[in-house]
Image 1 (cartoon, rainbow, N blue to C red):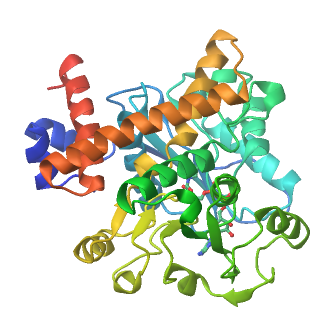
Image 2: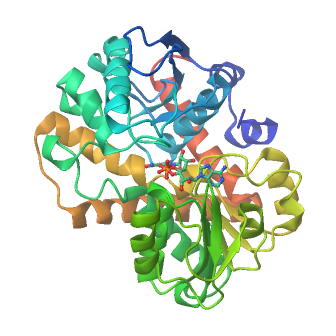
Length: 397
Ligand code: NAD
């Protein structure tokens, strides 16, 4: 659980609000009943509504992975509650998971997504849960959901032709780069163009983060994916890396020297961006992290124990629900468009993401300085106080 006694005190949180936020509002666990050719075992689906205080809808992505668990989905739904509140979006926090290999052929994945939408039809059509991409899913999977619901506001991260938002695909990475630029300036007193960066993950979030940071002039010295990484002390040419990735399907083997994911995390760089999976910086390796600044592109890449070690070692951590919120901010625009039929240009999407994230960053920074607390605690307290206010307004307290 993200809340602790310090946050409760900072917010003046009533016991009842604490209890409401300490466990999920609702959990749905079901099986895909349709036969999926080539898949013999049952595919399980989890949907967790952490808190609907600022919803419905409950907003949060759908993760497809063979090892996703109910506990993981619940942890991610909780992060969404605070992310949405910190961005001041009228969304509760939710998340869903599909226990299936995301590397299955596209036609099989399409059938799985259609069946997922069929099983969750009531949640989707009532507007209680609005999914978006997460690990293992992207615009095609969101298109499959839309194919079942035929309701534009029922899912975000769709392809443009069916009401997707220009700029949504790159929104999370764009937000991570904007937050990184401001954080480097604030905490390292440097311009991003003078910073060295290591990025773990070259999926949606990692690759777009690299692209925007390299356009800002940052020197990205290392990038990895699940198979390992490449290191080049003079900086990686991201355009060339993207071309290589398109052919090879991995960043592994691209020029420079080959490094492991562990080695990447321990590099002596200014800025480290874990943008792959959760729990990669843990009690076992936190003391070895040399970067002064860590911007959480992924959700929950730093464990609670590691967070304490990093704090002790005077490392600055910009938390996930601030750093990677660009995606949900864009999703909000797409959801609104789905309801109104309005259209938005890519530049507008970028501008809204930047403005929203910068506002949240400055508020978080100010509060953390005034209370002498970490950015994570500060962001959490700000988000939690908005949730408590809403609970009062709704007569829940
Ligand atoms: P993705 O599936 O597009 O990419 C995941 C990347 O992580 C791939 O490069 C993969 O090779 C790599 N990877 C997987 N397992 C790994 C491991 N054990 N070690 C190192 N690398 C590994 O997923 P994504 O959408 O880019 O999401 C990445 C993270 O960002 C997740 O934590 C997700 O929850 C978070 N996030 C995503 C979005 C979004 O809009 N897609 C928004 C907010 C947060």
